[in-house]
Image (cartoon, rainbow over all chains, first blue to last red; front, top):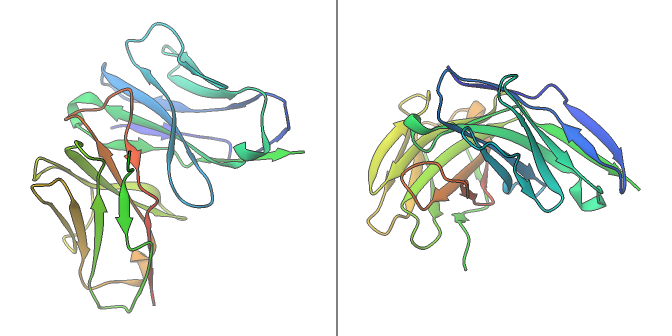
Length: 115
Length: 115
């Protein structure tokens, strides 16, 4: 069975500081992808970053980086230089290749950026 | 480039009624997936369609059904609505038959309230 765990229901960060959102996953499959999505109050899920299970380098997309530790089965999201607009729900998700286009989502972390 | 369009954005229905939600994927995308998001259960996979065929189905009762048309537009139907069906229903489209590093593109969702 596939499972995503996010243990931080809520996080606060000072504007311009960096913050790490935790994500651990469980799967017996060797081929999978890990994703982070941002969901503002409007409801739309916004794709942030992706890491494939065979990627040796940690993914980076602008201010977002993914700290991928395969042996620990963790895929933490690091947001550098936080901005007020980063306040939102953040979801970690996993897709297993053999299962087609199906995401398994974590419960999310609510991030609040403080001015 | 137009994004994923979900209609309607908001819907109020009475218990026992049925409802149809629509999703127009990004042009050229052949895979459409549906998710239900509730405060209690989080984000749960409903089903995925690829080239008009249901390829994957989540653990939902038969009251939840869907279909995909030849132009890749998809509809989901919920019959005999229950109060617990109140949720944000998200649609996501993907260009390929499997997960990619571009992830899905989600729509803004349809917020269904059952009274």
